[in-house]
Length: 601
Image (tube, rainbow, N blue to C red; front, side, top):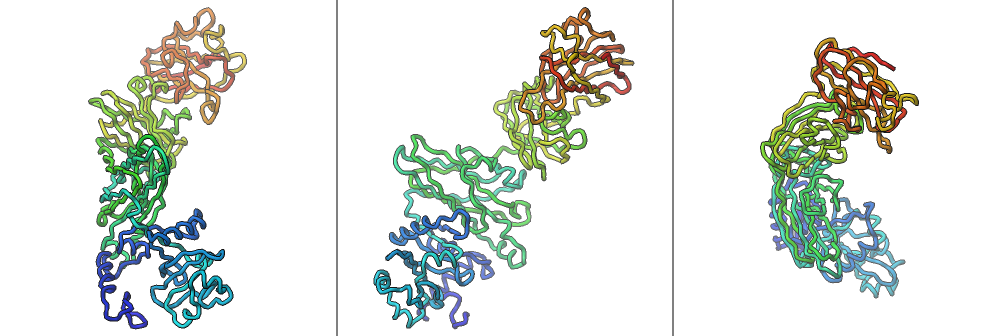
């Protein structure tokens, strides 16, 4: 019972009980009288089905004149129910009239308690502002209103914006010529748990709007409603903040395909723990139907997705002034293969802008038949992750020019790479972080084929590195420049048969520079003598040459692939395509204890 003897909800006629019965039914639907609360917009939607919209007067994008225009129009035609939140904390007031006269903007409000009126500007007690002309224009009998407090009062628009937190509008759905509703359930998220990482596992719908070829823009409203549940309210009673687990919204993308990355969103919704989230937009006239993707999103995963409480059910209403179709977008393909790995120590090689990129973990994707696999990289806490997919030739030669697919910009938490129509075969997958030295564990998943971990390209070999520089005398360039033999040369001595892998790099030329790095070549010659103009004859006499004889600077440097060699002495010549003055580094991998290096000059 209330302080005045009435029930929580009551009619002015003491013998009427329908209001209390309606309240009881509403509480029953929402889980009981431990219902944590709502607002007038939510309540009016439950009672009338009219579309709820909340406008906060303290938000950064609030438009004063636009709100007045909308309230005036809605009040005039009766297509909107208006309530305001303010004065008494968490208490809503019905807006009965929205009018302007004599240069004054006034609203007539009603306190549902039928008492306790506004006492500020343009209240019933304000004799200074209520001039005879103004009272006549608004039909206001000030003297009669002073005799009885029925909770009805006038307030000016400025005061309403100053003292009220927001305005709730409930719109007549008949304003829209076309409407559909669909119901769904949030699926368990086996992959990403953060919408900032990937929206791909969320429920998504393709909206195709047949906008007219000419004329005004087509208004489209999308209303997402989270179904109420008793466990939600019981959690509140138990002291657990369940509301934090249910911040929902709808993001709108162009194209109609399944969306994954939030930064590509056309219209981003606002996350809210209210039962209803409304997204509104206008589509201009066009000669072809407009296809959009409606991606449902959660700011934080619900307990249901962690397997601790019931599912999240929802309804999605779409209202539009033009004909449209709404259909669910097929869920992502299930994972066919997954492996875990880590960037640690030397294997934290960073992006392909760094020579250490080739030290990253590598995986082989085996496709027994042609497919369009999707690769997903997930790493909790990772600031920037990416993945590359190489064709079979690249898997053998490590030639960066043959890398057909990359996941794109490095993204926090992981990335996604979709490959279209790959033939059967073996494909190289390299996950990487943006910055070298970033250590983190990760999971790699593929929707088709089988993943297998690959060893480092120099697995089982001992690493050595030699540094030097091309100076004015030794920067001779390729054989085309006529002084090829003047380039830096090294003598390698193998004490017994061994495997050898060489990588030539120009340090500092790939990392964040606008100019292209120099094209490099490392050539291996039999015999320990120094190459000269008489004996060198360019690259034609070389035993092995990096990158198949082409000058290049792929990720990791020009590579002379792993080659078995007999014991003996060898000469290595380091060159650039065009004469280049700057530092070089030669990274050598050989069977342990077999390699000794001597410099000619």
